Amino acid sequence: MQKRRWKIVLITIMIAIANMAFMPNLAPAPEPNPPPGPDRFSIIAVKYTAYEWHLLTWKNKTFVCSIIIDHEGMPHPGEVYRDCGNAIYKTWITQPPCIIREYKLCVGYYAVQVDSQQKEKEISMQLAPAGAWISLEDCEPVLSTSTNICETKPTLVFTGTEPLPNETITQIAGTYDGKSFDCADTDVCKFRVPATDEDGVTVKFWSYSSYGDSSPVFTAQVRVQEVDEGDPDQLYWYVDVLSPQWQGNPVATCSDSWGVFPPVGGAPAWLSTPTQSEDLSSDIPYTYLAANLILQGVVDASSCPDGGLPPGNVVNQCGLEKSRDAVKEWQNQFDELILSTAKETGVPARLIKSLFARESQFWPGIFQEVGDTGLGQLTENGADTTLFWNRSFYNQFCPLVMDAEVCGVGYMNLEEIDQVALRRALVSSVDATCKECPLGLDLTQADFSVGVFAHTMIANCEQAGQVVYNYTGESPGDAATYEDLWKFTLVNYNAGGGCLAEAITEATNRGLEITWENISPYLTGACSGAVDYVNDISK
Image 1 (cartoon, rainbow, N blue to C red):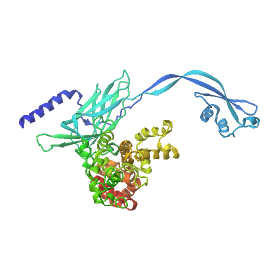
Image 2 (cartoon, rainbow, N blue to C red):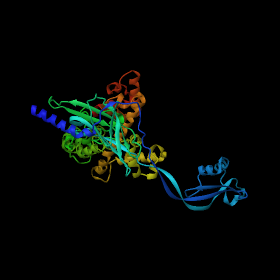
Image 3 (tube, rainbow, N blue to C red):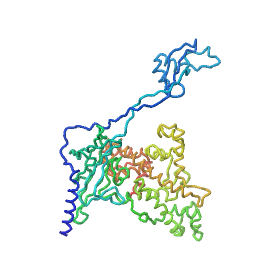
Image 4 (cartoon, rainbow, N blue to C red):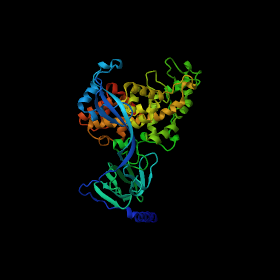
């Protein structure tokens, strides 16, 4: 034991010596002296065609003014205002249309192009700014979580980046929990950080460039928790970092937007992602799934009373027993895809699987023709949430349905007819119903839908966070815990943001903390079903 302790001390000393050149001292932050921020522009010359138009009166064809534009087609109203003045502009935009064959009766002005020339002009172009990134040194990510584990006191690493050729990063600076740090003549800055409380500390950091400016000021929330894992002779440090500039293992989905860390050492089981798909395996005798397998002929229950399905197609006990093996195989066939989707999107794998179990029992069709579609039972309202709150998904999905230029205006700015078309296309994309296919299902479509539902869950966590902020005045991470925020997300998914807002309002009006236990009693009336829904998925 003594030899092991000396070995750890020796390794720590060697690492410290190797890094001393990059290790600044933390000191109380001086008076505010913010970095200048990005300030880089370049003047470039571009060639263009200048078109000259004349405005003439319909009466007598008298010249009024000349308009110079840099595009084909008629001058825009703003260009008329710029070159001809307010009085002529007002007449131009209010004059009635002119019938050419009766032009002698027309009033106001008409435009005619009289010349075009190749010219050159100078324009100002904004150049890419310097950057700064945060990472950890000599720490290993904990499998299936965003947490990192370090065997020695953690070292934060700040790295500056300079995108411009012939320019370099000259300095890294910032503040850690209100104390300043500074590393001159280098593009890398490192220092060891002490343990923090469960809320972590705020870190601000930036880089300076030889260009004469700096990167933007970036922010991170860093939490360091010291644990002994049952061995008092070996300490470990769990480290979590929330920042858009984080370069380590991806953070738990929605943690960054909520501004909240998952529990120390990882999330609860229902919000976890195992390392292999076999760990997602389940063996639950789903009755709705069993009934569909019997109806589609996958299971032969002809020896059972009523063929295993009494009137109403509710499977009886005999039919359930006959279908047990098929039910187990079916409910686990999506596990590998669920796991890969979880790793890609950060949405916990067990949450995705539990959602499918609760919504459809893994039968990816339309439930009783009421519009709830696919493994996660998406509706048009749900599609609206996905497209509005998950902008990156919208940017990927919209061009698959309509012209990219139309999509470029953003979902909220689309014409209503286009919004409806996009929502219905999204719902259709998760519908695996196929009359010509074996079993009446296109399982390729079901596979595609797994990713759609993961992105839908991200959209709901964004909206749930906004609801919490709107009705508490606090950031989601300050108002509630990581686990409860996920439960609020499930309320949002199942019952809608209105139900969540009403319950939070009732709880805050009574001075209660925003916890699941405190808001669930106020999910009443049409919202009440969300209580069992959340409890079923999170148990």
